[in-house]
Length: 248
Ligand SMILES: O=C(O)c1cc(C(=O)O)c2c(n1)C(=O)C(=O)c1cc(C(=O)O)[nH]c1-2
Image (tube, rainbow, N blue to C red; front, side, top):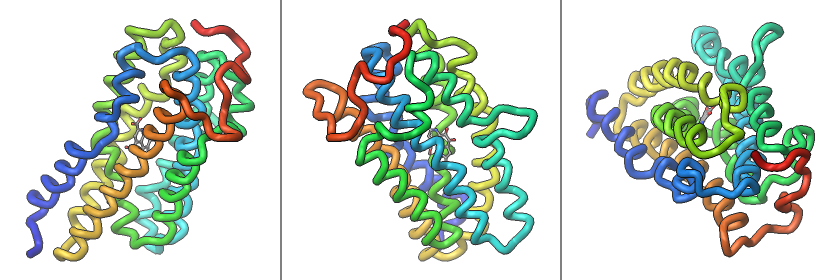
């Protein structure tokens, strides 16, 4: 049976409550000050790959949309990450964080040291958005419903626990606090309007679950590789390498 929009929204929010990556143990370590400088660096290197891929997935999405109004509503996402001639974007802001933790920013930007499982998970998200229905693609972005809470917790936790944390190094997250709610208000409204059959609601819910897996798998990979007993896959970043300045 088709759920009402309010019931369907509650179903989507339950998926976040049960599966979002704010519950992953790596986030407890990171936000609680329990990460070593190299573990923070590993997170910065791997998470960069997600950041850098987001505007590519949004471009893939827009390439499939024939409704100019939907493209217009979506295109600010690309500017938010890539920036404009006047305003720095999220990718540049992420590289301030790379500088602050002492990493060689060119190495981070090259994505050479990214873990294989991170690459597989992120690439799967870009492919999902390219290949699935527009409804599933928009529904997958709705993990952002749950992101402002984790960004606020991250700013607070990093500021309290790490000397590298300041307004410049954390500017990425501060900007997302206003960007994400705007994106997600549109995305949620669009999904509630277009998921108008039980089958479409099931497909949208499954897309959101898939996306929580994309996020969770990245942190599993990070935890397995860099938290004791560490198992670093061949080719991935080796702690201590590409570090230009000591930890602060
Ligand atoms: O730090 C986080 O936990 C987190 C999570 C997510 C998310 O839920 O997918 C995004 C972001 N950050 C983020 O910064 C971001 O720009 C973003 C875009 C998207 C998307 O799917 O389009 N998710 C996320």
